[in-house]
Length: 298
Image (tube, rainbow, N blue to C red; front, side, top):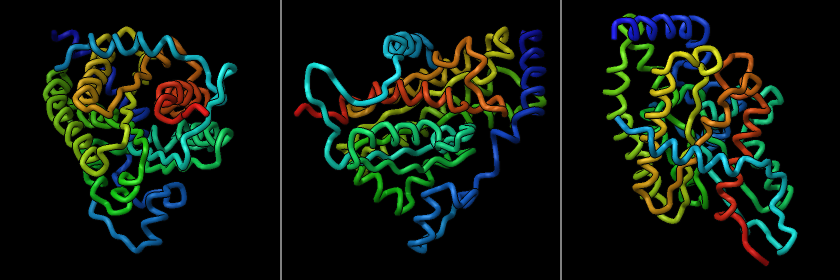
């Protein structure tokens, strides 16, 4: 146990030095105003702000998702006429993965790719991006009470969420001088409660919206793959998100961790966020998963 804790401490010390301040920024809803539709619309309206699970379930989902990793360029079928649901409204909310940090093409990450792909089939698609880098579950809970987000969720057919990676990083930051597995396990209980509150909040605003909770990956796998505790933490927290999604009739979990495993070409230069290719794989899988909710047969 002492050797494992020492290894964890050394690993996260290295990680924090080279990357913590890249991944975590002070929570500020007006950060990079020009890139956040939430802040732009809020300013126009004159608003102000006051800002252990088993991994078995996750592993099952991951294996299932691996069967649907083929890129999806268009919503088409050779044997029938398919079209996008009329006036499709998608709301994406969460952290830097929703915002699209790391996409060197400035295409706004997986959300931007989804929008471009869907609009090749229909112009009647609206995707609103409320991603903010550094957001944790507690930040997201606060933002869900903003009028602009309330109105968007009420009108949404689909809500996409990425959240949780920064919660893990905060545990590491708060315990950097005495890093053990136990703090992650304890915080996971609170994380589960906050995730349930997030889902309850959205479902109460729009019971008909279909919610897709997008899991997170292990950005340290290519450098510290031999540290099994890191992978265990990510798997376990993903399993928590899966279990929360299972509690709601209109909610689904989409695994992404397996997409990044054994790949050294899918991360941005900060070695934390996906690059364009990484976001493309995420978008392909997400599109495959949400197709039953967005297409109709003519």
